Image (cartoon, rainbow, N blue to C red; front, side, top):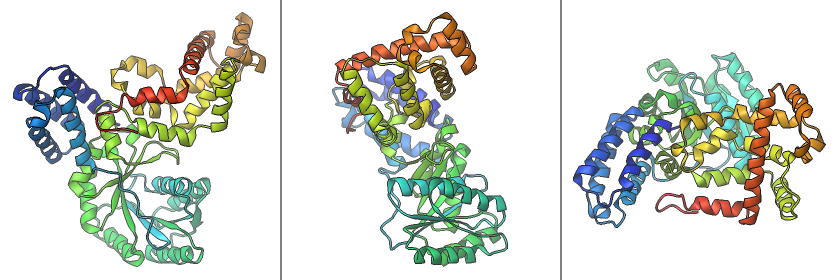
Length: 453
């Protein structure tokens, strides 16, 4: 998300960073570029106007003009205003109400409600240690009920059965009664997709809302619809008392206009963003971290949290001890690093959060993808245990066998061995300099002004 916006903003702000002094002229030129970048990202015009005016007001004040590093000061102003527009802080779910806490999911058809319900269930179970029950009130799409049942089993949530011959209100009240009897912490209620102009369908969800009195009413919307996502959310909010928004399919949204428009237009916070198809691909929405990504500083804090959740600490400890003993980094270790990377959401998710990614040429970024990671894994899996432990023995005939076994070419095996050699050198250097914490310390220096661990 935000690829094009980040690229354009980073270039504009990079040019300003090099200037000794800022004045009305160069600030005006920079803000024109920022305005065009926001409009190109499909940010709603009223939001763009407010944003530019606020930045201009602060940029022409003493805060920036009198600063010893005006370029850096202006970057901080832009970041602060991005945070302000998106909501200042992460608005968490209210889980302190009397259980079961009821969360009602609403939205258009095809916005990803059912998948988001499963993702949210998994997030509540794994991160909040809650017991969760899910129920589908979508009587118009039998496949939706079966889909939610399958997903519930996958994420470890309880499933309350429903059928198309029942009324949504009856399904919802029966599920709430069952959740109470079983002392469930959270009840997630998936509803049918509907248009805000469909009066009958809107009346139906209002009835469900009245029957449940949910603690949270979340509007699930496809971020790829841009500023229309914010307008649709506003229309739903006029009919239903929303408490927040879940933006889905943000991994396919290169512009990011919805994320920057929703809060300002609806007055409702974005609580979560969907960052992929897997049930693990749901992240709380942190305006400050997203703002840092937009201006090209990455999201180091989320990267560290992701690593803490996903990395197998026992395996990591084994590798550290092995390197300390001087035993060296072999291909089996390399394979484990690739697996860990995949567990962290893939190379795309990691690159999205790394600082300075906008400065890497697109051609170079295109060569590093999850498909390539899987190819590397396949090549290593085709090797014997001895070959992984002693890569130096991999010569002509062995390379042909490995290539045939992995469905690749000998050139691919050569490329992997070259990458492995580079990784081996890097691990040796990292071991000398204090390991992972030292590397994270270096990343800390890349955090934007005013943001720390």
